[in-house]
Amino acid sequence: MGKLTTIFKDTAIYGLSSIVGRFLNYMLVPLYTAKLSAASGGYGIITNIYAYVALALVLLTFGMETTYFRFTNKTHTDSQTVYSTTLISVGSVSLMFAILVLLFLTPISRLMGYGDHPSYVGTMAVTVAIDAFLCIPFAHLRQQKKAIKFAVLKFMNITMSVML
Image (tube, rainbow, N blue to C red; front, side, top):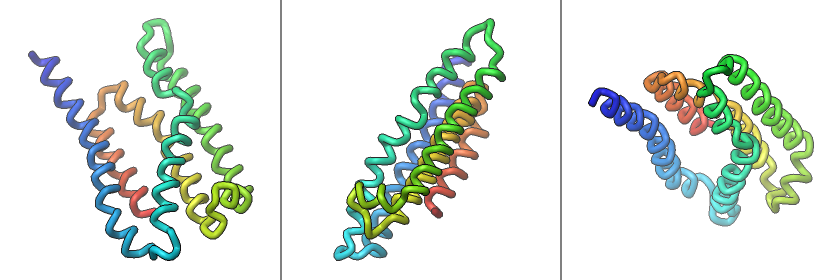
């Protein structure tokens, strides 16, 4: 019974941070609609950029979170080596993504149809790169079964994302 209780407790803690993040995103809708005029189309742009964010996160993490779990659970594998290799791989790709988007911000913004709002695209690129990079340390905390630390850091990450 003790293991089952631990699983439910950890699942609730991990799930709560995701639920809070989505809830805060929902709560920001009135702020976006109040601050971004309908004539500018700003809220529609924000909504479209969120769709790009989901795709970019999948591409930037390229399944390394699952790979990390798979290799750290093998008995003959050094988990610290797996962690550092995974972190360096995702971190490098994320950094290159952010740099390339920022270097070619104007053409990319125009190509996406947001030539009037390149700052939205730049903010998205930096935020996605940070989130992709942080995916691995959060997976590491989950693998080490540090649910409370995971939740506290996840809430801090959500807070920083909302503030940006």
